[in-house]
Length: 373
Image 1 (cartoon, rainbow, N blue to C red):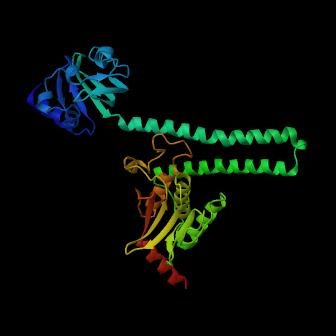
Image 2: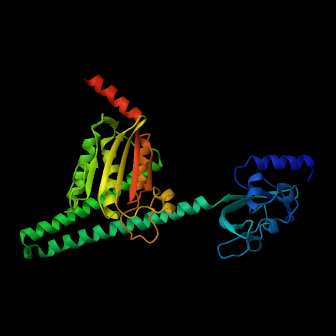
Image 3: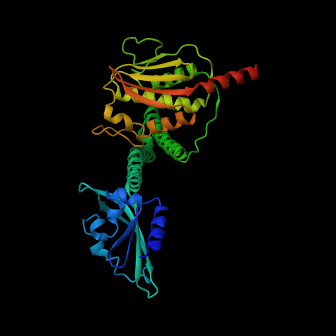
């Protein structure tokens, strides 16, 4: 290859974002772009002229050598000009392997023989993560739907077949169970829609002036009604009561009240589910934002899990499977859509989930209040 051709090939490869190599008809590696050189752990100059099969070790899932099995240099380039996308493993320094998505194109010379084989080695981790996420989504939805739908089917069939055998109270109890299971399905569908909108950047907020203290009280009232030990108290813990709030008088905030309540509900319910003692909601007005914290008295969150706790479907290893694993991911999306941030940390006595609402929202609420006065 002439110097001009080599420079042209190098410049062309450098324009490509994915790791890409060029191989001639004899199997000699003509060049690799900088991204490919980093992936292979070698210097670009050292790769030029090397045997492609030795320098770029590619295997399928069964561990079979791709060069030997597919013989890409032997195929007629006029009949098979392209190599369709394949999931492969590439050996990197240290003997480790990494997933790649291989695609290729064959180029012929004037005599119709293979002159150039160009292979793109796109990193496959993202594809695998997406595939794993899809599998997890199917598994989660199936698991969460199976229980309520089985219950609905069982109770409705029983009522249809044996209506006269039950008292009014028994029928009412079964219908109430069907109603609750239908609500579970509705909530699941709502969560899936929220995730879809967050992922697409299309989460809509209906902002208005919000009484934060009122939202906290409403969330705690609903959480307290969910069980005999979930009674709301204000500013202090009393006896066996597990819910508390510390919310001073605050200016109204400009936010979506339903979404704000959704975030608080997720955090409070998590505290009740995983914590062992009191769950306390505190709200503080700071110079730049409004700080909301939900603290529980439990075993806390392991430091290794903190970076992952707001990702989709995350559950700490060994934890019993409950819920969809989407609540914290949705909460993060809602808070960030408001321009705030959310995080978690472990305290001496449990876990604390905190989020902020920007100070700009409070100032805008004040402007709206003046305009409406």
